[in-house]
Length: 372
Image 1 (cartoon, rainbow, N blue to C red):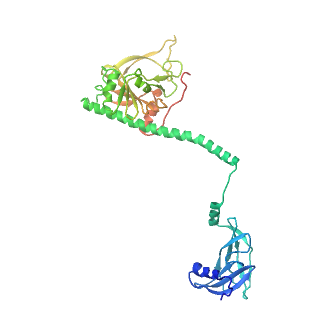
Image 2: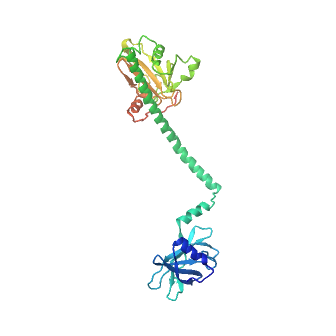
Image 3: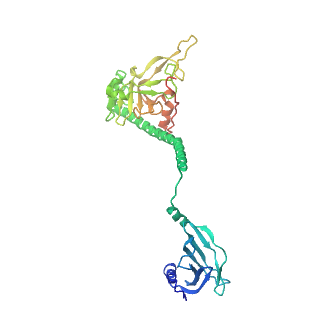
């Protein structure tokens, strides 16, 4: 039995916490400054270690406390004893004693020396307790890297989000316009005939007033001469470089009567004065950039064609907010007598409009400087 009166707490800890039952001590011996206790528990012979001076604590100034020291005795040969580990003060490292070799006389000796091992739990608790600090140079370098990455990625993320939002609004408002036209056909008893609402005998302002009745909470501005409506009139860039018959990049300045929707979108209305929405007109030919095509004598080349337009609706899905560009937030709708369709010209954003309506949300445009 255990006769060392200096260490009764160790026996209590072993019996109460480690084995939750009786622990019959069979042998006590010392191995290089450590007391090793071996006993019987649950039909297994087990060894435990304790410090020389105080239970569970070494006399070394570098060792704080014993973490564990347990193992199974072998009845064969020299009966190796368990692993012994100690936590170093101010360090997450653990010193581990491999095995203690015990001979039949009860004398022990170490086979291996102490070695350092890492315990995940020790590393975690040590990291939580340790106070880290960074130099000013490290902080500045880190902030610089974050700034560069942010400068490269944030504008792209913002642009992608804006494009998605614009595409969603384009589909929504285009659908609202079509629904309003169908409702007007039913009310005017003119199914499949848009000329009843977009009457060639009316002015653009009269058509805007009539059309606005089908948009709840909308307002109508006659022109940019009205002081309260000036903020709704602005310049819109074309989908790509376009001179509109001039020599430099141009814009389309809004002056048509406008329907201001409750969601902030704007519908500019242009009413064609073509009887029965049909007319034959002579046009000057322009190239793809909007510059006049001249013949050998320097005169504009003309051609004659017919148009079947009742009206044009220019819609800005986010009002006067940027980018104010054809093919992005600004789209052109052609109203014919029997149908409604997107604009056909590339400088008016026809390709982007078709992409948005198909669900691909791919904006196609080329930026340019006005006046160049």
